[in-house]
Amino acid sequence: MLQKTHTLAGVVAAECVIIHFNQPLISWEAGTALLIGCIVGPLADIDKKGSTMARILLPLSWVLQLLRVKHRTLTHSLLFLVLLGYLLAPLPEFFYWTILAAYASHPLIDLLNDQGVALLWPINKKFRLLPKPIGIDTGSFQEIVFRIILAVVAIILPFISLGSF
Ligand SMILES: [Zn+2]
Image 1 (cartoon, rainbow, N blue to C red):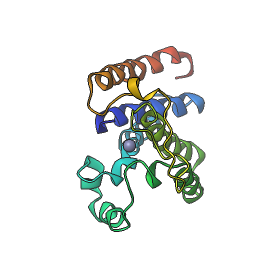
Image 2 (tube, helix red, strand yellow):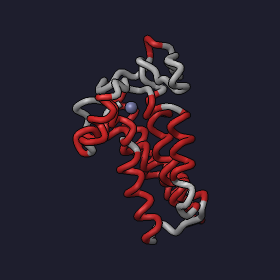
Image 3 (cartoon, rainbow, N blue to C red):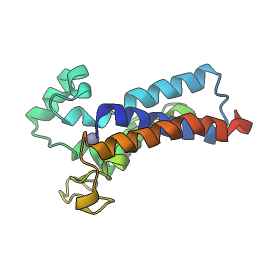
């Protein structure tokens, strides 16, 4: 999936956390959470040479390249998510879950991709949610449709839960 699709998924994940914690939408906490969603959503693609995240975090992506970490493996794995959970433990609960949910949204929607994700890395088996022929190819028309759906969800979600905002 493209960076803009992951950004939207990160925003939707952040909105879910905002709703779960009954955080008012007009608050600096909610604003920060949405910003975190935008930034953390595409983060796992730091393992992809030339991706926006790899270019922004160049020293880190170089380290991954030196270690020959392949795309959709370590940074897209459950193991990495658990490690991230431990690392972020000192954070306040609201931001802890915002970052974790936004990060998890990435491998979650990549599971719709026809290439699959090595969720159980270092075991290299790739997992997919859709059969390969109908999987969403990166940059394809299906991805555009999927992105529009995510955008609609991102816009509607705060209104659905207006009572809690
Ligand atoms: Zn990815």
